[in-house]
Image 1 (cartoon, chains in turn cyan, blue):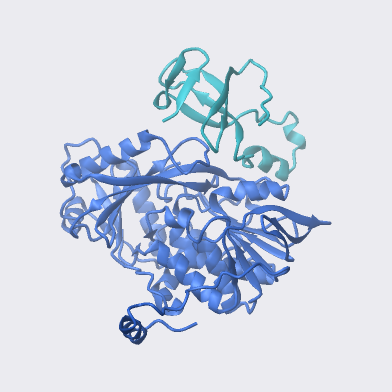
Image 2 (tube, rainbow over the protein chains, first blue to last red; image 1 turned 120 degrees about the horizontal axis):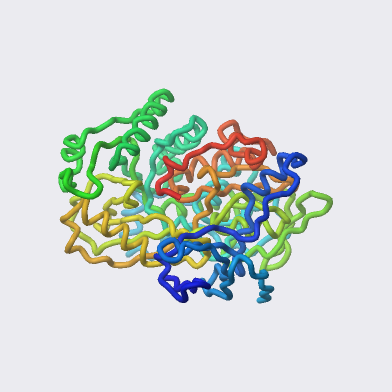
Length: 93
Length: 416
């Protein structure tokens, strides 16, 4: 069971949240000029690291707001929680 | 390799089983091979076996970071079926099912394939329509399925609760009689023994730490036991495929999730088939040891921890209680998680890559065990000829750029 700290509501059970996958994937600005491979990379390719993972969560059964988290996917240890308007933290481990 | 038979069993019994030959060697890695298979699970060992048996390439090494069959091969619920929606999927899964039929004889190793039938249940109108569509798609492919009414479901699985007064009533089911289960360890060990006897080197406790790639051409793998040269490397690493891909500078359309399962204490035989309920996330069979084997849905988050959270287990057990009230006093013996590699279209990747001589066989997600023989067979051909086997052609990496996805999100065992 994960204990997830919503930046707005504090620590809550995993069951209150829904997962949003990898974070910080920006929609390409110039979509008209995008090649098929670039579209595939944006839509389907994922970093899927074993270790530090920047990801999105939504407090679905709470304040219903999206936020970002950093988690070690090998140990499930959360390393940071931050709002979407906050800067991506640099985590080195 | 000495052949296993009833005579060898008697002969060894007379010796108090002290003189059985070792099932496979444990050689030190050579400096170079024609093909290296990374990953010693069922799919990797099957790949090595068919490379040696059908493609005439015997100078092959299987490199495994842990022990044989210690990953998802030893962590799944051993269900074997071929009732997917798309023609491409029926091609590969039915091919696998054909190979399962004769696998024990082929490998001279009893994989305990039991064709006890697999029944998919529908619990709402959407399920019924999806099941009917899949049912008809399979019949178009001459892949025989039977559609059961709730009363026929009850006759086939007498302990099931078909009361309409439950949260997820049984509205119907689709039965594939030639589907079933097999013994997971025996599959890994059988392929290992057969591959080894054809000259394949199986190297355990040896982790790949990097690839040596020069001018876009594979040269070999860096491992914890030193560099091993090979012009062709096939990666069959399931949940760790993205990690291997990153070593070669590749991004794959894969996310790794924990998928959990559990077994009960052993009971006398009373559940003689496999029943799957995708909507409520429970699939049940009874092992030869008597344990009820039950699988859950995936944990929603990415993870490599080989354990999941409790909520999926609670969901699985609450669904099982409703469907099979007699389970209520059964105790759970143990639960575990495996790391499944899920593609966006819930179909596998059997593919060449932009690196010449590097191949991937992954993305089997929540249902790879059933495909083991077919997967190894077509992947061996893909590596040997450097050209996709016809049954594997649809599962190329390029499909994510061309848009030719093979969408099996409904037919895969668990929703994701």
